[in-house]
Image (cartoon, rainbow, N blue to C red; front, top):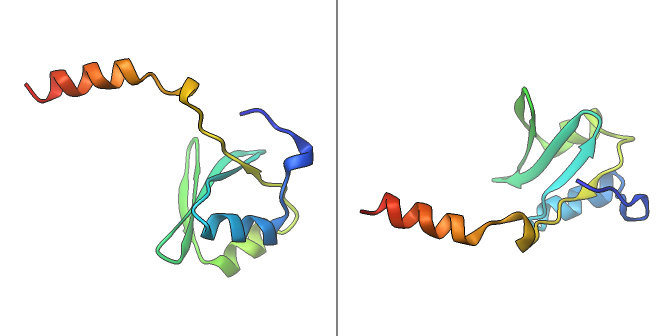
Length: 89
């Protein structure tokens, strides 16, 4: 994950982005965030938790959030096609 500090978001912007179905992350500790069914899911290497928006604000008030951008170069479509072909035999 490459960071561009010009593209960082504060807690209020982060909440809006999450509600709009974006995936965000913080770097320390590396944690991904997404919004599902009115709650914010947080996933780290050794943990996962579900937070209310209010709890999210209280736990991460001064954090800088970054938009996770998934590009085609991160996905090997040929490998996926091969897997599904094998799986459905």
